[in-house]
Amino acid sequence: MDQNILMEEEKEDKRVYKLSIWWLEHRAFFRRLGYGVFILFDAVLLLFVSWTMIDSFIIGYTHEERSLSQMIASGQADLRAYTVSHAADPLISQDVQVFPIGNSRYDFYTQVANPNKDWWVEFDYQFVFDAGHTEVMHGFLLPEQQKPFVSLAVTSQTSTQTGTIVFTNMMWHRIDHKVIPDYQKWQSDRLNFFIDSPTYTKETAFENNEIGRTTFRVTNKTVYAYFDPVFYVLLKRGVSVVGVSRVTIESIGSDEEKEISLNWFGSLPNVSSVEVVPDVNLFDPGIYQRPEGKSSIDARTVPLNP
Image (cartoon, rainbow, N blue to C red; front, side, top):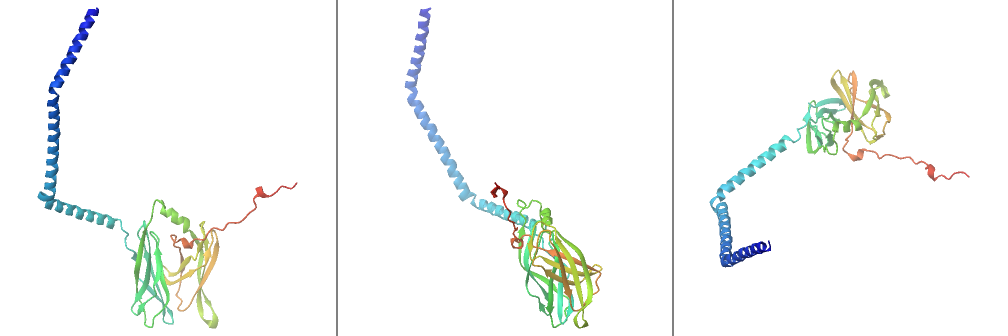
């Protein structure tokens, strides 16, 4: 039994010895083979890099330049197409109406609409007519808003019957839906004015002159208080507007009701109804009044009676 084990160990030692002798005899060959493979790899890599540079900068340079130019042109065209497709649509304005109010004075009126649901705009505007133009005023339109634009008591020594409205310095603002996810709800929460009982009457004033008087009540149904809200007053005969005016009040608080009246002078039209349009730039932080807090006594700080 022991003799067999010794014979196996001798066989293993002989096998290791032969492998060692073989490695010593062929080690130099494998070293040279490794150097050769490394040199061949470097040569192939160098040839590949050289050919790529020659093809890119000498053989195919003109073709690559042409392809790059086409890619840039195509990219610019796609960018322009995307920009145009997502740009704001222009404002839509109705024909300008001119109302003579006597003493060579005229009121200019038109309706302008912003058809965009994701853009609001601010701009300067004026009315242009044959004898001149009105003063430049600043205006704005909220998304998908239509409202009156007027210029009142404009003096013209020549008879004026027509005009056009001209916009300048237009600045569009896109609605950030990350800040305002639901714009319609955001607007209705801030522009909720209840107009009650608008009336128009004719009255006899000083020296038996007849004047018109419009009165209405406005209630601010929002939780916000505003500085200088504007209200456009339109006198209508049927569906046609026959007179325009504008009134600005100093302020109106949340859930506050105010009664407003204004007088009409000059030529007084026949009127069947009165329309009042509130106008507040909800994106102007200056129109919001700061909430007023009321001081109170903290019961925790009041000492108990002995």
